[in-house]
Amino acid sequence: AQTVTQSQPEMSVQEAETVTLSCTYDTSESDYYLFWYKQPPSRQMILVIRQEAYKQQNATENRFSVNFQKAAKSFSLKISDSQLGDAAMYFCAYRGAPGTYKYIFGTGTRLKVLA
Amino acid sequence: SQTIHQWPATLVQPVGSPLSLECTVEGTSNPNLYWYRQAAGRGLQLLFYSVGIGQISSEVPQNLSASRPQDRQFILSSKKLLLSDSGFYLCAWSVRGGSGNTIYFGEGSWLTVV
Image (cartoon, rainbow over all chains, first blue to last red; front, top):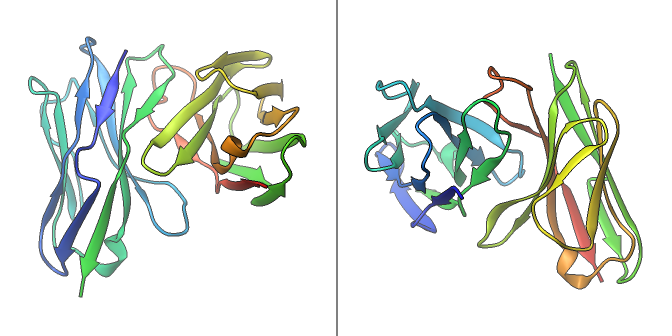
């Protein structure tokens, strides 16, 4: 069965600095999708970024980018120029190839942004 | 555009009482539907998912059940709540088929069993 591991329960970053959140996963599939979701204090889950495993190019969304290492099964999120609004819980998620329906989430990393 | 709503937002129920959380998706047809529970330190735990009316897959054996009486309606139920059922419950949906790569969440429901 697939698993997603986030080994950093909590991280802190100074405002305007860069922080990287780690995620590793375990799967025997070659085609799959990876996601980062943000959960602010409102608890609303917000999609930050997603990556298709067959694409070698790392996904980027404004200040958010990923470092996808398929062989190492690693999918880290880099937040540049951190802002106070980035403070939230961040979840890494995995979904298998089309035809599979389950989304597996990690335990989350709480990010604190220091002014 | 597609929207997802779940209710009630907050619920306080005594042990042994029944439960019904409802979720409705608008603006799409034939969605995959999901119920997750969020507990501290455990992330999001998948409870049930459904790929069609009446089709329910259970991930975690427990005293909860799910039903999908209509295409865009998903209900989480219990006949007798336990203290351990307390938590934050999230309904979610994704597009069925190969293009449905992103999962979208409702606002969540806080359940406290007392």
